[in-house]
Length: 109
Image (tube, helix red, strand yellow):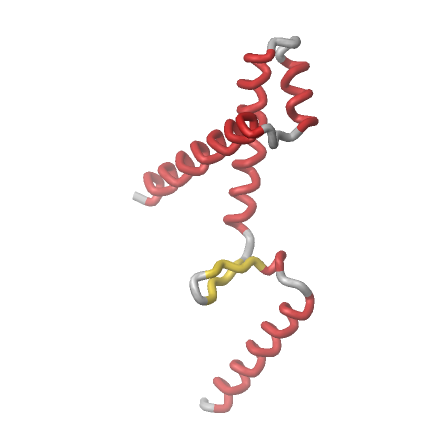
């Protein structure tokens, strides 16, 4: 059952990645270096270059999504936070709160 759920989740990520890559081309907000690489691989054929760009860019996006899934994170009031995005003060504040909670918990034992 878990394999089926994981497989469905992977398909959703893949489809979303392809959608994002296609949208980049449509809006002109594409990665210029990657588009040049795709154009080169397509031997100058613009239509082939678009297909190659979507394939290459979707792989990058999938990798980004998978890295984000593996980042330690926590939710607070419906917002997801990753520790990587927190500044040092925020990290220190979280550490202090956790230490205080630990002390209170140990005090009650």
